Every structure is written in C-alpha cells, then in structure tokens.
Figure 1 (tube, rainbow, N blue to C red):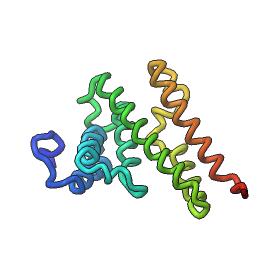
Figure 2: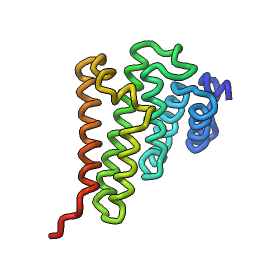
Figure 3: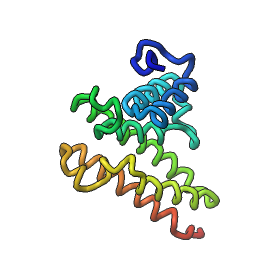
Figure 4: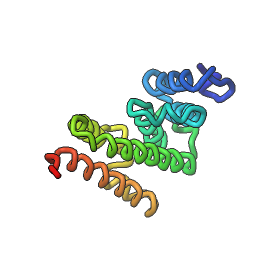
Length: 167
C-alpha cells in the first residue's frame, strides 16, 4: 500500500486501482492519493466511471476534499494542485449530472435521481466547493463553475420531483 500511495508501484488493473483508492479514502484519509488513483483507473478503463453505479462520485468526493486541503496528504499539495483537484471534482460531478439527467427521463428512476441529488446537496465532502462563502474566496472562473454546477443540480432535483407531463 505505501508504494502504491507513493506512486512507486501500480495496482494490477483498473478495478484493483479503484479498490486501493477506496481504501485511501475510507481507511487512510489520503484524499489526494485516492483522487490520483481514481483518475488513473478511469484513464485506463473509462467504463469504471461511466456506469451509473460507477465510482466517479466517490472520486469527485476525494478530489474535492483534496482540493480543499482535507486529508492526511493534503500538505503535499500546493495551490495549483489543489485547484486542479477542485476542477477535476467539478468535471466528475458534471459528468455524473449528465448521466443522471438521462436516467431521470425514465419515470421509474426519477425518485432515485431526486434522492441522489438531494444527497449531493448535503454531502459534507463538498462543503468546501458548495458553501457560498467558501467558493466566494476562489478565482472568478472557479466560482462561476461551482455556482453553475450546484444550480444545475438543484434544477434537475426540482425537475425530478415534478409530475411527468403527458403528451
């Protein structure tokens, strides 16, 4: 594990890389290492991220936490690294939001989509990139990125809770 976290060794395959990433988050509080491992797994097997039950949301959590300076390895990141992880977190969430928008078109899935999005809006892993006072301290482009993302999450949540219109 230490060699993998340090980048000196590599897991056998993308699925194992995901397993190490999850261990980094859950057991080791190594959010930057987890984000790096998730990124490597997705690069080597994009389907790990693209499935509805994929790990992209967990990766976004790790990246957001690392980007906001949380985790036992946060001190290894400079400002540029933290900004990169915050942007990556937004990209992963945006990709999942796009997928959830497609899923929400199925009437039997709307309630689950609403539940998922409500969780996003409360998940403490994203407080550093969701709280208006905290994101106000970020550069203008990043602030707009997060404001737009959370507005779109809220819009899809609201839409998912509305009755379907009949044609």
